[in-house]
Image (cartoon, rainbow, N blue to C red):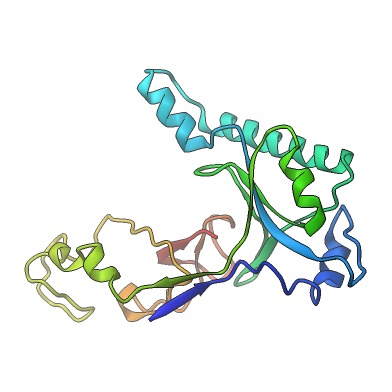
Length: 225
């Protein structure tokens, strides 16, 4: 089984007319201009790295204040791009969650300091030369093969005793049903309505949305895009 994580490097010409209407900086609309989606890495350390270093040094660390510094650096970088005549669109996605829809831009600050941009291909060299840029990497299509992942993460050894439980288990043994635990999954998707998650048909709790979703959030699943 394989899942595809799609970070398209081409095929943007069809969607450009829509993107241009949303962008504060316009890209050329001629079909003669080739565009690329790139991830621009910036020099300031991301939040978790800075927090780790502060911990090693025995220093206090305000994660939210530092995050704002990272965001400010990203804004400065985007301003430099404009000043250098580099047209761009910050890539993103609209994420629906019941009655709530969040417009999420691909700007990263916790484990990576970078911004995903759609730019003319000829502008990539100029991006690399902007102050504060560590690297510019073309977004690629990644194919993740999961046929050996269970053995790789040693899941069977972590099941406990008895080794397998289902949603119909009646043993009532504390600790085997995930009481008080939060599981983090990095994946292309999760079926939050599955019986093993409680079969709750309401939307999951959205990490960027309000504390209580309009329909009443699924308490078993929290997700963040």
